[in-house]
Length: 376
Image 1 (cartoon, helix red, strand yellow):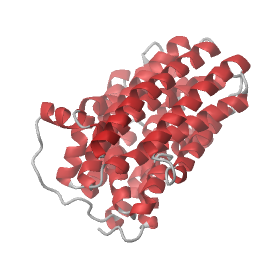
Image 2 (cartoon, one colour):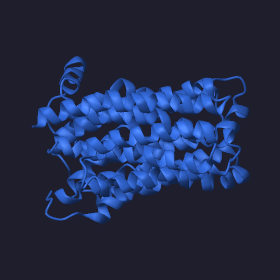
Image 3 (cartoon, helix red, strand yellow):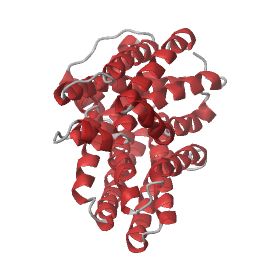
């Protein structure tokens, strides 16, 4: 690999693969009502977060695993497994079996969200790394926005199961493309450390865990707001628009991070978003809601850009991305159930959002400060 120039075509392919990783969450969030009818009385909200279980348990190990087998092999394995499981979800099955497929799907998702940004950073020259990581940070928002537009038509044609089959077919279609195009990033090798040693190595080093902490706090907001905020504002049409506002901020953060350190930009995004959520609670303004989502998007992109800010080698970046995956999955797992408890009122939703943003300013801000000191 060389970083003398940025390989934009391959980066675009990796980002596109990331959209299908985002769809592993989006396809459940956006078919939530239909799925509650299919599995009446079942805790369907847990199925939304089911993919997060593996990330919570093994996110920290994932970076070492990707470094051991190589990022290319990790992507190929993840796409193949994810395709098979999504196709399986197109079949009639009990909720227990469906939940099991969701948890197993977490293996593929975890490998993708660690290996893909690691490869993207390796394919970018130094001056483009923050832009590339800002682009990567948009994968969740773009994935949600695209699916929000197409899922209603697919459901009307073939039902909720057709959505999952379609996702599996797209993954199957992209598998030979990544097989042919992706280079080897990080030579496979090394020994996997034990579970406790991995966590000690990552969480004793703020350069590894600070971006992940910011990301985990952010992810507690995003999926839940897309699921609950449009109905509370009596504007269901916002379902595809909120992710677009979010990803606009994420993409913009990559360019802003060329002039402002990403670690400081992340905290600024949390602060601005917290203020905007307070204004949203008082006004109920859709414009303010979109601005708040834009601000959270800036934070999301800045957290991704902070990985290469503090970690120069692909191996270090893979470990930092492992922490991103683990802490991010904790956020996605906990966010939806927490918001579900307060979703009866707008102030309940914005109140939780304000608390999360304040936590981002305080805790992620402290972690980033430690990372800057350790890098000095």
